[in-house]
Image: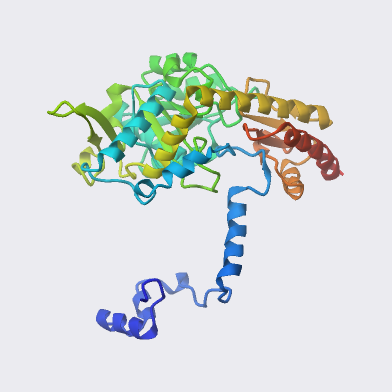
Length: 450
């Protein structure tokens, strides 16, 4: 069989003859010359299976960050994943399934999505949740579009304390659709600039997107903000950290209308950019403006519980003018991973993970301030699993030097100062690792400064 072997010369010849062209290059005729590659690819020669396996394993280790002690966050976190999570999702009936599209998807698939939706809705303090989104950034952008559909105003305001990569995704979505994104700056204390927010609200808006906690790990009471947004006729969209929600008051309790977030912390390993899994929940009254799909539970004529595709708003399934999104209907396997993780951890386990993240991050910051002469926190507000620290040396230079010592020592944030570094500590970080980080930072800061 030649099923997985590249085509032979005679096979290529037969295909070209069938298409009526003389060579493969003839197929490229519609492409301008200046964008065509005029040389062969610079690829290494063939190798046998063993060295190839070693090479791929090395690449995989750099992909997950497993060779370094991770104190970096910024939207992707090094949490412990119980072995049972991978064992369950690796079962063939789960692992081989891509996004199930049809309404006649199996009862097992529909039930797993329904359970996921229920957990997300409870975690967010909302009434409904959809079957998941691509990732947290696209979920935030879809929430902004959803708010525009509800309020019919072409402006969305976004807090400047949102993850900057998420903000870029929101701009990409909305700019191309002809809508306006207004960034609300934060002041020197790390809080949203009240006067700037008031000024931008004057021009009318559909929603304000605000993080909880914010990109710098800070936690603020959302209720006063929700009241202000609602008094001006807008919706409050909260971009929430699901681990933090196990400890904090839910966005729903604070007055949020739509809640989105990234589910990577819930059982999905670090893996550069994914695949990850976004979540979205909202008030029931907004259900028909929500993108993606909703699974419902019902009772059939025999009195048995059944699960059904209640709402699906893709343009492949309904009239295009009524479609709310052409996004992938859900990230089925990643959402199942979230569901299995939350089921295994339970409310008590999630709360314990959140508590340990909070305590270890605070201990980390305290030890850095004690060990590194001249170090300080950038802001003095309450923080959860992340904090911005100002070091007496270039943040980028310190990060690079710490790699040689075996640490992913945070993310430079030059907008907060040359020495600003955003650090995070999850429940995986031990006291010895935190001590090692603080001591190494002290040495590296002295070396870099000189």
